[in-house]
Length: 480
Image (cartoon, rainbow, N blue to C red; front, side, top):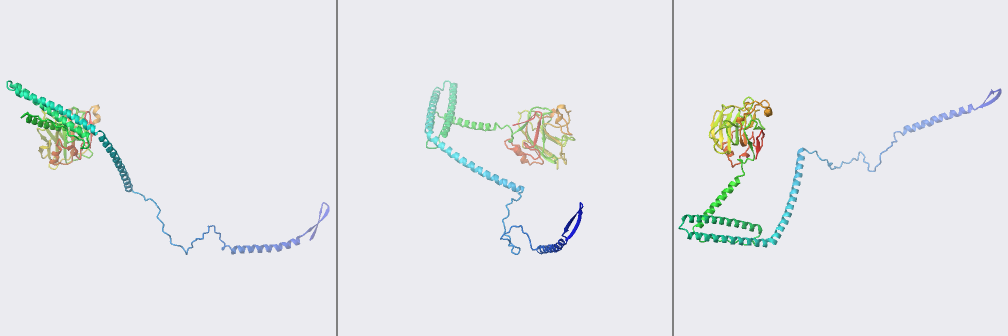
């Protein structure tokens, strides 16, 4: 140890320093620390690659790469494929068919149950009221038989009395016999009517033949001689007349011809009353057939039925009447066909079937009235083609004769705003207007003209009655 002497505040102080011992300890510990550190570094480097921390879960059935088994096939997942539009439609049809079958089965079951219950109720009703109804029918029959017998006896007495007193006054005897014959005819008619009513009562009351009782027979007229044959002939004539009247009655509600269900009514002549026709196809045609039914009230010098034209030529097609004649013009009034004696002015208004036929190939045009060809002319507008974009109307024509009034300015077409002439207007009824783009066979036209047929059901392919749009103007209207 070294002794250091120092003076502090005038006093000497001795301090012993341990420097040699501390330096020897420092020289010993430093190599030891270096050796320990080297050993740790060597151990860390040695075990660095061998130690691996596995954080995964351990399983006893772990499969190594060498023992990889073949994959087991599994079922495909239940994924619905993308359905196309047709698949959806077929599915909807199948569902609707299944529902329909279920509804039909349900309805069938309901009907069976209801019919069974109804049958049981009817049987109970017959069993309960059959006897009383039969007695009532029998009583009514007896009363009617007694009344008829009394009337017959009275008539026979009068007839015999008239035969005995005949001779002095021949006119009175003839009058009496005529009166008796009329009375007998009325009696026979009443007898037949009562017998018919009795049969209806029996039919409605009885459902089985066991409870039906025979109706009393009508008493026969005896001692009348030849008058019985006369009465039988009169009765047969009355039956025939009744049959004819029933036939006429069945035809009475049918006011329109050829099975048509509606018609166009033109109540008066006016420039504002007409019907616009709007076809679905263009009218660029080289041949056509136009047919219609008309019932004119009055026919003037020129009465237009069917008219088609454009701004350049308003007279491309015209089917018109003039007094007693019918006309068909194509491409202008210079190309026309005339049929005389078609309209009967003195007779009351009646239905008339008209057809106009034209072909551009040979220029052959013909008119048909009542199913018969009444006029035919070759070389009419040969090679002509009807232009498209025109105006088609019934009961009038656009001829540009008259200036438009403010009230009728909205009725014209764009670029074809001509007015109408009231002198050319049709007045009456029109139905069954059809137009084809070809020449119809003669047999077809004859069938269309049958008033008791079904011509209205055979529609054209250019203008179809009941299908093609037709717009009435003014006072024109559709009627049943």
